[in-house]
Amino acid sequence: MKREVVIIGGGPAGLAAAIEAKKDGCDVLLIDENRKAGGQLFKQLHKFFGSSAHRAGVRGIDIGKELLEESEKIQVDVWLNSPCIGIFPDKRAVVLRDGKTEIVEAEKLLLCTGGAENPLRFPGWTLPGVMGAGAAQTMVNVQRVLPGKRILMVGSGNVGVIVAYQLLQAGADVVGIVEGMPRIGAYGVHAAKIRRAGIPFYLGYTIAEARGKDHVEKAVIAKFENGQIVKGTELETQVDAVCIAVGLRPLSELAQMAGVHHEFIPELGGWMPIHNADMETSVPGIYVAGDTAGVEEASTAMDEGRLAAAAAAAALGHLTKEQADERKAQIKGRLDSLRQGPFGERRMAAKERVVKKGA
Image 1 (cartoon, rainbow, N blue to C red):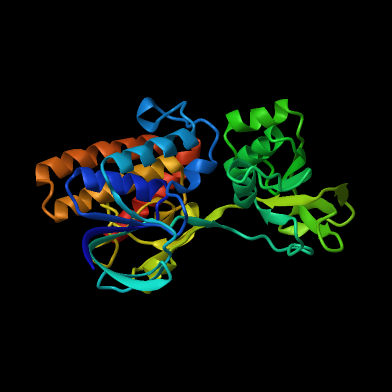
Image 2 (cartoon, rainbow, N blue to C red):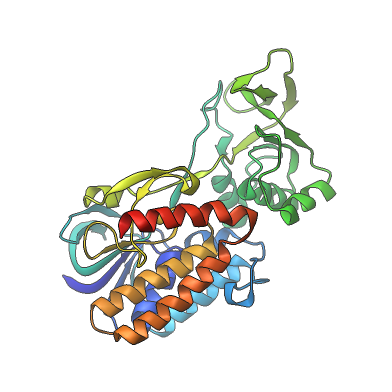
């Protein structure tokens, strides 16, 4: 089977890219391993920030619904429950669909496979009840199941603080948020909600141990200095769940299989594909977007998907150079705006290094 544009991953980046490419007249196939496209958007009950162009004030779940409705309206071809298990450098994708292996040949291939939560190893980290914050968010916001009644959150970045508040709203008792650094990592607006709710932050602390026989029953935290636990500072609390929110890394195994050049960019999550200003990688015709191209936010992911789609559509002849340049300039302007401020400046500088390397 041959298609013009094949997109692997139906999260914010992939879904936005599919809509953009389809509107530009491309023959598009969107492939996702889940039963529903939209990815992280359907976990996000909080309102987005930024300007009206970034959908400020709109909840992620509502943006996801809008994108799904638009993709159905313009008849984007979508394969669900279809994991991609391999990529060749010639842009052939190997997909498991309905119990059979199918090979799809793409003229342009866009990888939007997202990110994965970083693990944190400590005594008891394999006990049932220790989980990633994203897993807890899926349980409470998608499956409508509380992961526990008394929960300790490890990590005070946006993910940890937002999920802690959502767990609180769902009826859990969040006993505290532990952060190894001396300051809170989340935006002030999120941290303020936690403070108003009376949830304590333990800054300069880490989790030392999770205890229990066949599931988590207690958690031990302790002061953390110079990369070491400070003996004698341990605090024990009863919990039945420990959520880990210590960052994400790009999921780029498929890009690696295709021979895409990777480098370690710590500000964007670690090892990631190097790409140019149009999101094209070192393998001609293979593009990346979203957390695969460096961990940022859903708003950024959607615009990176649109940018890659516009570049692919232009390369296929569906857009003139003038049309493509105008579209890309608009999208890049929005991306630059999203990367402003104290939290975005490091990401912008890192992205500029990536694009320079990929040029």
